[in-house]
Each structure stands twice: as structure tokens, then as C-alpha cells.
Length: 390
Image (cartoon, rainbow, N blue to C red; front, top):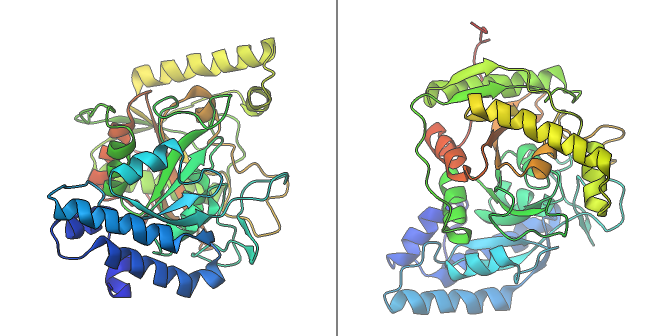
């Protein structure tokens, strides 16, 4: 069995390389993941169930394939599976075909609750590995917590209003919502798309290649133009959150030379449209709002390659809920418009609260987002001196 420390530090791509080259077996990796999860998840509560027997059987199949000379892009990589999807969802079948081994179901909120930014298990709420008093976000709560805690390098999620990006931001990991329609939607409205939680951008890119091999690689513009907006024109974003995300964006622009411009992206609040679409009852007002926002976003993307915002307008709330605040305020517009969106760790507020930086690209430009993240090193977190706007 692998030692705990090396396993927790390995990326999915690194694990696959070790398995494909015979330096470790998929069974060894999976046994280590199961042992570490059994040891630590009693307190963390990221998983609602472990599938030990099925995982070991799947690992044996991977080992047999490797012994025959098959090279699987994600050979032997343990993954967490969002409980509301299950291992038979489209993306999880694709990941298994690439060599991933599902080890268990990750927590989601209880059905029928008024807010969705937490995870529930029969042992209590899922805790945030960055601070147990904070919610891990949701609804892909357990997936984010499991990745952040090093239990698995990858976990699947789904994002209908920010349900991948919000927990990724609050747990300090990477979250990708692909272009709507690139993968089969998980609801009738088309708002909810499969997505992934990962610790490295290379792993997020490997995920996308596995589940959407037809996604076209796009060259990174020589100097991409980035429109920075802390509010999208309507969100009540905390100044400390906005400042933390903006500093992260400027750190990224130094690593990936970019032209960052404070630009007034001014959308209508999508709340009434999202609610109507989700309910399957859009009316003329919904169509007008969606059309106006789509037109504005087209104009922005005629001029800019990326839109950058904080991922959430406020830091993680406690386990008693968000109160009147809308955690999805900066994410769900892009579930309606369908644009791909990625959140990267941006660092912390002066109070130590985790913040995410959200990057949004044109339709179909998923690989461009991941290329930027790879070149930026996967994280924009750090502590730097104040940055001027000039």
C-alpha cells in the first residue's frame, strides 16, 4: 500500500503515470485511498458511503488492462462520486473507461431544504477542511471536501447554479463547469451540467479529455484581454472578497501576460429567470431578461477573451446557513447563458476566509480556461503588496 503522505500529495495525472508504468498497482492506490478515507472521514464527513468491494474489483480490472499493455489516461485514479449522480452517470462512466476507480458517494444537501450550500450525512454536516466552522459550500459539498482533504485527487460534481464552483472556492480547490451542452445536462431545463473538483489544473484538463474528448484545443491569445467585474452589475459583493479576487487576477496576469481591464459588465439579476427556467415555466419576462443578458455577454466577448469575477460575493457562511445572502449571485448567470466557467483558489480575506477567482470564457472555450490555469500554476492564491489600477 502507498504511504499516506505521498498518496495525498499525488495528482491524478501522477497516479496514472505510476500505474501505467508498473511502479504501483491500481489496487495499492485504491487500498491507500480507502484506508485514508476510513481514518479521516469520520470527522470530515465528506462521504456518505464507501464502495470498498466494488472499488477493489474495478482496480483489479485496471491492473489487468495495464498488464495487457493498455495505457489508460487516468489509470487507477480514485475518485469521489457526487451522491445525487451515482457511478452510472454519463461523466462517471466516461471516467471509469479512462481508468478511474470510484471509491464512494460524496455528500450533498438534504432534499427539500431552503438553501443548498452545505452537505449532509447521517453523521452530521460535512465540514470544510479549511475551517470546521465554515460550510464547504454545495451542492457538491462532499466532493470539494474530499479533494481538499487529499482523500481523492478528483471528484465529480454537477453545477446548476454554482454547485461545483462555490464549494471549490470555499474549500480552496479548482472547480470546472463546462460549456452547457458539452456533456448531457442533468436536468430538463438544461441549467445543470456535470463538472469536476480537482487540486491541479492538469487534473481538470485530464478530466475534460476523458469525458469530452471532442472538446477542441484552443490556442491562448498572445495577450488575452480580461474584463474584471466584482459585481456583474447587480451583486452585493463584500469589498474584502472583491479585493482578494482582484489581487489574485493581477497575480495571474503576471504569470500569464494578460490585459486586465476594469469593465462594467452590467447584467440583469438572473434570479427570476433562473427560477422560472428551473420550474419549467418561462414567460415573456424570462425571455426578455435572458435575451438582454445574452446580448450584453456577446458584446463583452466581442472585446474580451475572459470575464473575471469573485466566485461568490461573500465568504463561506457557517453551518446555520447563509441567511438572506445569495451565494450563487455571481455564478448562476452562466448556467443560464451556458458559458464555461472555472474557479481557482484566490487566497484569503484579511480575516482568513477563502476566496475563489472565477474565470468565464466564450462558448466552447473550455480548453482555453484550463490552459490559462495550467500556465498560471493552478492557484492564484498568495500574499502580495497592494496593486495600483494603472
